[in-house]
View (cartoon, rainbow, N blue to C red):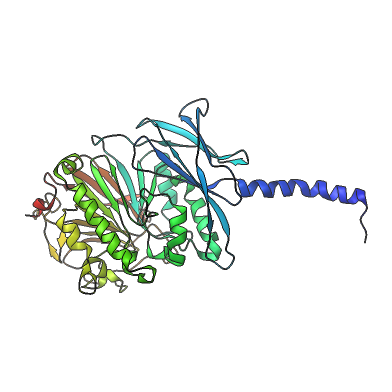
Length: 437
């Protein structure tokens, strides 16, 4: 059947809005999230489009009548390693000259499409304030049970920073990275409002961790595999446990990270630095201890993370003990476990009555039950002597760094409607390896 000129014109009129919509949607910002570049006068905004577009953030003090400043950044092409080789553009813009502690409204995008307005508070400067952090790992696109409660907490201004300790989406590479897209959109209400700081987990391994390295914008020049930053009276170190398990990507990475960790710890433990920021906190995905029954690395007496590669090369327990790391945050196990202060399987409580007051070894917290399709991990029937508390339900951890001597940690159960099911004070007047004696 032939179509006349009038019929073609009518069809074009019907199709044109759809075609315009398709073009706009590919340039429309999505997956907006913040990260902290390590400077309280700065904040990095990252987002994704599926067509090349400008990288602009407009922002101004909140509340305010208008965006008073505009900053341009750049977009990087990311090609997923799946069979479709999907293309996307990752946009990064760093806002500078912020007033520490000031709230700002912003939107990101270009004339081809803008995000909805969001707001954030620039981190405070110096060491004389009390940062609040949400801490969790192992959150998937399916069954992200803790996410609505985390979103509610964020909207109430409860957190300065979120720490996501590995394993995102399950998995970001799945369905040619569409699962990653869906997950990044899902966390946007949280991640676009507070810095969302990350470390890689085992579920990010595909295509040499490319989805993780491309999507997040962590400080430093290692694409988020390892980095450190300061907040209030604490120095936080994020590192990759995965370099020990995926040696096909280069065994040199184990040595390279270990040497970087030692240099960073040496700098952080200089007397002048340690007086200024006495707390040293680490975050890595796979724990070196756990009492789960799933035969993971942490269930082995000679855990690779704890003792290192064969011949005990590059083990982390001795390194962290040597430099007096105070608190070690882990995930991977889909449960919550708090350990007594422990080193080399020996418990070193401060005292019987107050085990976390002046502890004589690092404190470990495993918080990997934010919610994913793999559900929860059970524990062995008899707890280990170094295991203080084990909780098998969905939830996340809140960390409040009160000052240079006091930290408050609590575990929130989403299964129990937000009930706080654990809480401890970590109290240390003396930091560094001298605190162990």
